[in-house]
Image (cartoon, rainbow, N blue to C red; front, side, top):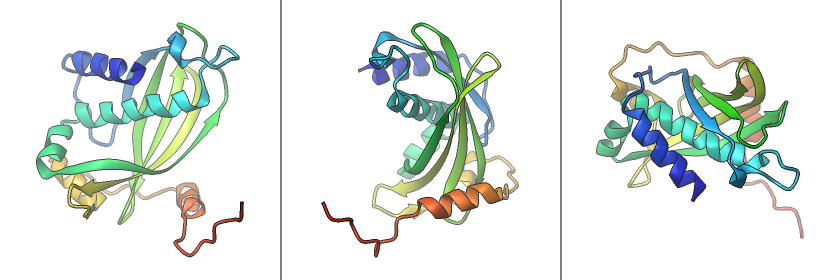
Length: 179
């Protein structure tokens, strides 16, 4: 329920917020609510990833791509994500999620999302996403970028992102460990 309330709040506020490039960066504001906390009274690690989902939706909405994706029948999915924590967030603290496209290859789009409190880095994540059509077709990042109408130059992926992407791939021939 908390996710839907935050999403509704974002949609209502989003109409007043400035437009951004489809590549970002976009800064999405949040506040820590009691439902975000774990037993140690700081934000639960899974909550960070849920809030980052909203940050990515904010990037799509504020760049004007959301209605274009709907019309095309395309939607984003997360393929892999890794997050690193540096500090904690506590009850009622304000924080932002900064979302930016790092680059793309023939199949996937790569994003970095930082959780910041003021100028202090709290957590950082890298996300590998893809777009699919309602019919199950794989949509290339180039097709999605073409929807934006922006003149975009390809961003070469940093070596660390390529290494990370390779290390997170699951091969269909990978055996499942016994129980």
